[in-house]
Every structure is written in C-alpha cells, then in structure tokens.
Image 1 (cartoon, helix red, strand yellow):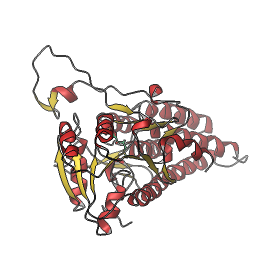
Image 2 (image 1 turned 45 degrees about the vertical axis):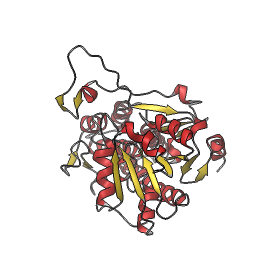
Image 3 (image 1 turned 45 degrees about the horizontal axis):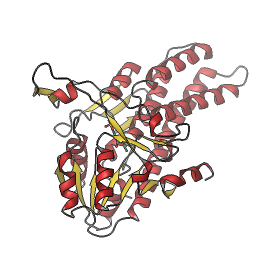
Image 4 (image 1 turned 30 degrees about the horizontal axis):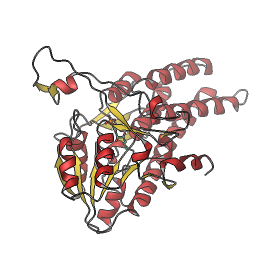
Length: 356
Ligand code: MRU
C-alpha cells in the first residue's frame, strides 16, 4: 500500500524531545502542526480532540509518555519511576472509552519494569530506561502502521469495482498512525483502480465525518459524498450503499462494539435494509477483560459541542438541557464481521484470537 499523505498525524522528533501532531480541531480549513513538549499539552491535545481516533490516541499517549520521561531531569531510577508512574496515571484518564489508550500505556509500563529488572549494577539505569521507553513507543507506532496496512488488505477482499461504502466519523489516516482502519481498504481500492464511492456521514456534534473523513478522502481523490447523519436511512433505502465500514473504540469479549455515537443507528438500519455491516480495527482494540458492551464506559462530553455549531454561533434557546454521549454500543448480533490485522471474524469468533 502506497503512502497517502507525506506526514503522519503523530510524529516523535528524532531526538525524542517533541511530539508533533496535526491539529484536527482546525481541519480542514488549516493544516497546523503543533509541537507538544509537556504532559499537560498531551493531555489537553487528547481531551480536546486535537488528536483523536482510538489508535492515534494510544500512539500519542505512548510516544508522549516516552517523550516526557526522556525530557525529565532526574538523577536516580527511583525519581524516574515516580515521574513515569505519575505521567502514565495522568495521561490514562485523558479519555475513557478507547481502550487503545490504556492498552498502550500498560504496554509502556510492562517495558519499564522489564528493563528495570535487567539493569546491571553500575549501569546508567536512567538513560537505559529512557532509551528503552522511546524505542517501545516507536515500536507501538510502527506496529500500528503495519496493522492498518493488514486491516486494509483484509478489508479490501470484501470490495468489488465500483463499490459504494457508507462510513461514519473518521477511522482514517488521521485517526491512526497512518492509512486508517475503516478507510484503509478504500485507499487500497482507489490505488487498485476500483473507483470506490464513499458516503460519509457528517457525524454530529464534532463533524469528524465532514471535516476529517471528507478532507482526507478528497485529498486522496476518492469519490466522496457527504450526508447528514439523519439521511442514512433514505440513502440505504434508495439502494446507494453496498456495505458499511466503521471503526471502533473498544470491542468487548462478546463482540459488542463501542464506536462514535450514531454507529449503532447505522447498524440497525443496515440490518433493516440487508446491507453488510463491518467493523474494522486492530486487535489492540479488543478488550477481553470487558465481557460485554454493558461494561464499556461511554464518555460524556461538554454541552457546548451540541449547543454551538462547531464551537461558535450558539443556536439554542436559554434553558434547554443537553446530553452528549460521545459513543454508543452496537450489539454483536448486528455486526456482519470484524476486520482485524489477523483476519475477518464473526463477533462470536473473537475468542479464537486468544490462540492466534
Ligand atoms: O471522538 P473520536 O473522534 O475520537 O471518535 C473516534 C471514533 O469513534 C473512531 O471511529 C474510532 O476511534 C476508530 S478510529 C480508527
């Protein structure tokens, strides 16, 4: 799969002292790269959706933690450990639903203790641990790129020339280290001359579909049609959609999937109209400790995301109340298949992945 964009949504500088992210809040109007150097900047970049999408959040947290520890002025492994654990704890609560965040930070902690346990007397433990954490975080990012490529290849097998795909939110290049999950097969289809057509739901309230998915697909010259979320039913009824591809933030052990709010409505509609509904994501998004969708914490975000039309121009009368759940859970029985880097599985078959 060829590169689509010359930049990644998250990059650690060569000297591991700066994290550079493309600010997704100001896309598509402005392409602004932010240089982050502190835990607070990383925390707020994640919380305020400057960087978003489950895999990208995980990679940002891992690279950010490594960067903060690399910059830390400490003189002993004990001091380094305190700094590491405090920073990890802080970043861990930046968003609650996407499991990739906790998964990546836990992996960093395992590496920390593995390297610490092997330190030889008289060695420069602080530097050895700093270097190992940077290496581990970079590995998390490269593995994410490889997983997205494989998800793309596996998902591509479901597509035929001229295919029409409906997607929701943004599960593309911007939401991952590179290529995306739900959009990766579409990029391959485009490169293979299949001329795929994409319907992108705008994804209220934060418009990840109209601002981000439409931005990256049109940049890659994919035929893209934007619809309001409420138009999905008529678009499906008119026979304009062959398949639905969406990403995921957490997959429970029973195959229930949390993804951007509005996803479950699409799954219900797809079932009604007999359209296959696929979820695409890396196996790091499967949370085997979470028995079902009932156990997934759904992030509730601030009311201004609904009350204002994208941060400005209030459109609601005083006194009205708001409820803003950022995700919903699609029950396993509405999902045709889950496309991972390890293959395509029915939700009921996920347990096999323990053995692979
Ligand atoms: O609130 P967001 O924009 O982080 O939500 C993102 C989504 O719901 C994506 O579909 C999901 O993280 C998969 S990204 C490959």
